[in-house]
Image (cartoon, rainbow over the protein chains, first blue to last red):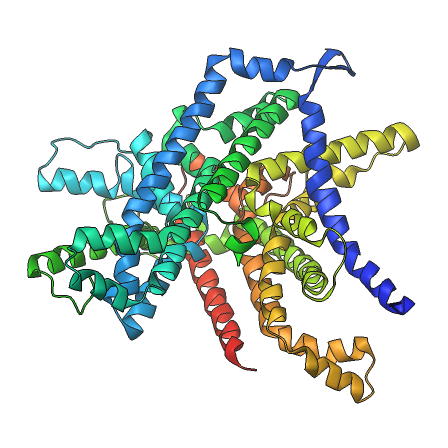
Length: 287
Length: 286
């Protein structure tokens, strides 16, 4: 079957934006970043290919400690987000009906129309030494002096979980909503209690939502810059901050590129493993 | 644990209390940001010194209000400029991509689709530095070959627009594809049978059908561009968008004028969000 030439031309025109976009703004920049991470400066304007930047990452404890710390904190934040979001999502999906259900669901989404910067600013006002929580504690007599609640790991965690909530609640509500009530009733009729019904019926059904929510939350947390920096202060030790320091403060683009590539590899690996374990594909997850 | 299965009252109360606490947690930071925009004090913290509108309308230091704070106003302008460009470009590219993936068949289609999704899983900081590195390489190569320095590719607004465009196009493509998928192709064929050329059929039949998705995608792109921080931070030059200016002030410690800006942002994005929900609602219509 031969296609009229003008239609082939149309197809080529349709290709133009995606080729420009993916090649010039996504693929080539990342290839270039990889190449730069593989070179070292031997003299002004002279470079040699080497793995020295990666070697520096593994030999300097500060770097790989920060990397490991970022990964562990991200996993913790993901688990906490899941544990906090699950009962709420279940409540919205199964315990309420009609208008109040729509209302509660939309209420969950509202904070996320606001910039992350504003949300973090809110937490700073709440948690700082002269802030609301500290004043409440003093007023209620629980502490006898003002306490600084900012600039520690717990503050970072509160902020990260807060910022991630939407990306967990939406997939959870969607999957739990599709669970037929009669399956839950059947579980009870067959002698199950709340725990066994939860474990054998509800959680297996919600697994795709749990998986895609956790993947997205982990990825966003790992790449987060604002929340750890503002709530954790100078000692936040977040890996994206290391990348920023190498690029903008130290102007060491070679090492910075190596860091960027390592973070990209970790992030993609976790997404890939998560998708494989839950038996999903990226294309299916975004639909 | 569904309403039709009886539960002990203590459990119901505890569950309700938990959900209430959750919503308090969700709302608390936004409420305090908004409330302290009206506090008559030089710092956004307690004690509450009474109500004032100075942080919006105050016209001299140290009580310079938002509407007289020229650096802040200028950065709002910069953000709006970037956001308009990014949303126009990403909606245009997203529309082309939607037609490409929903209508055409070509070799390596699935591979290209996965590549199209890739920007979703690249952390914003890394997308930023990779574009920074590559634009620098382009400048150096062109300089070496032609002896011309392309200053436009130095960190600045062009790079910020390109960096945000790089990940927002994935989102606009997904939104527009979702609606195009539901379009009944026989409507276009009917237009062709009535004598329309393919372009006319698309312009008069398909594009009007896509309009809610186009407007919705545009609003989402505008908001996400306006609020973007990570990618922008790496690519910004001397003209700082609002998020960068706010970040710098936040670190220095600022007067409640920041609360005023934040409240303004909340109101504007709330209104835009409602518009986008409203526009996309007629999605069920044929």
